[in-house]
Length: 417
Ligand SMILES: [Zn+2]
Image (cartoon, rainbow, N blue to C red; front, side, top):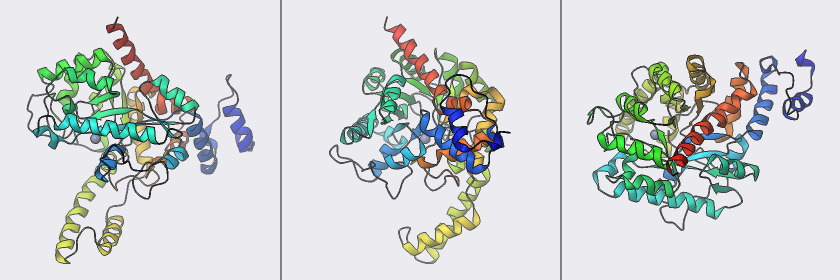
């Protein structure tokens, strides 16, 4: 029986045999043994995360100048991402979100200017710590960085508003290193309608948006359909020549009525297109009961602050708020995230799912066991417990998104002659 094998022998069987070794039945291991295997897999496999909001966290922290960055080369007391924790968790290529709030859309030029400054900040991070971080503009560069032990910083622009009203900016941002563009953020923009908006400005993708998608295909930028309305999603899928991604979206089945997550119909349509859906870990994205509880907790705390003359920054208030939230709205767990992955796999197969944590972007809502980038092995262990193979895990970690990214690169190369 497999359980008589020592863990070291097991690890040897799993990791040193390039040829087909007898399949290990991970479900037969103890939780502790499985976690060790998960850590090994996390370290030995490239791991991509579709969405980490570090650039905006740096900006909000006041690190707006090109000469000054937040030092995430060392462990940071706040936030969900830094170099030591990323190494611990085996995360190798977090997509840095170049996030443009919808508020910028009201000021012509402001969205592009912000995108430029966040790109500079990300480049500055890599340049300041060249022994820890490196920019990466292709799967091949991520592989090369991984071989050197460096954490890659690929970039995706969250909100196509950065393109402003000028199609030429699509190629501009490709040259600046942007490798996916999330067509919208919270509000409808010139490209199309957003899931959080109810205006229905265009009824889906706009005429300009159609040109943007075609241009993204042409220059080799992945089309990211997180944040768009269902109509925009369908319109974009209908015209794209290559597979798409959802960089940080979860399954709507667990959050009925929440258009920001993907319906089964859209998951199936995306799979047909060959795309990949990268699961968001935020509590409100994975569990509607938690989302409803959060709203109630917020309401209570606002009243409590007013009644007791407290402000959000008072330490007494913060302690109360934490205890109140814990007692009245417990966090979901890492198992819930695995439920989302299971759902996609059961619906369309293993080839269309990945990780898109939204770390540094969803506040204090992350599930127990998945609070920061160091905890990815807990999720991998849970998947192993549910019968996923090492090959399955590799697909989720990077092979699925690399397949899409390479298809996008190949198509763009053909257009260039
Ligand atoms: Zn987002």
